[in-house]
Image 1 (cartoon, rainbow, N blue to C red):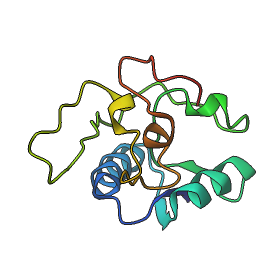
Image 2 (cartoon, one colour):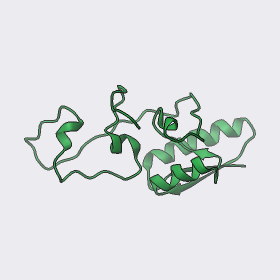
Image 3 (cartoon, rainbow, N blue to C red):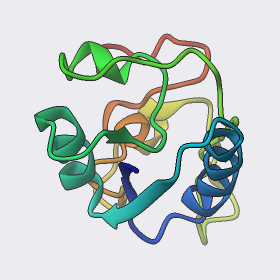
Length: 123
């Protein structure tokens, strides 16, 4: 049995868990997934309290030296912004610099303004 952490209440975790249970099941390995607050989930994986993290963005392992990226994507996710301001023009992360912006702590692409193109800076 292997145990993985994931970001609690993440709809993407439901999909990733199904994919990995099927993949590991074909190898004869049972897995258990435990939802936790995002920062706690990655901390527990990095500390060795569990076998790994269910999914994270590419290169997050560079900041967490005890984690190793498995180079097989489970899926692709895009972040979106939601507003009530119909006249808001968004060109990039810098347009979200005013105080009303909320992000989910521990979600690394949001914390760092990570973009799929890879130019979001240091993790």
